[in-house]
Length: 265
Image 1 (cartoon, rainbow, N blue to C red):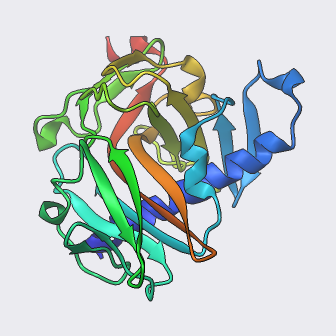
Image 2: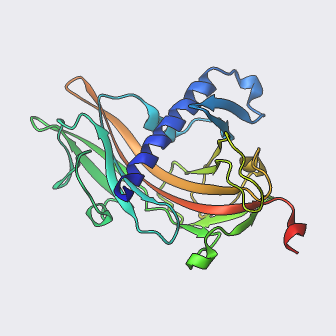
């Protein structure tokens, strides 16, 4: 089951980016200074960043898709690699590596792709080529987790700073998601709730103080997850068929949200 976690998260990312784009298109610019809330697949989604983003292309509909992905559900976990895609009959390669949505992969299969300019070869007969930069595999450096005892760190919501490994060649910024599904640390679980707050940090410089609104509607002592993602994607045309190619990396961290520090003094 664990081998499919990366693919599942990639699919969720595509769905939420698609949803956010549809919601934004339905609103005029007069409300751009306010958080945007929408119900998307029974998930209450708050998009903090409403400007243009390359990440919206991940949600564009195409006939063929090959998205290389790498996922870790916490900083101590082993990377899980895969290829999200559809229309397995279309041949897509990077160099000699065939990319198949049905294939089993390890991160070693894709290590050389991250942080490099790669060329996707699309099609078997008279192939076409798409060259894009796939950003470095993302790593969350702070809040720091170096042992199992440090999993679920206590994180104060006000002006929370995160750090990650910067990538100066990545022009797309990074996606930050804070998600809460009703789990609580020192209180009863809250049923039938799923909050997902999303922001895009435009500068991939390795450090950012988060907008406090990314914790909206998530209470004190909530057991939540912060996820960071970066990647790149391109859409090419092969004999009239739209082909989406690209790569992404994702890292998540479960944490406990603190709003009242007096509880821990």
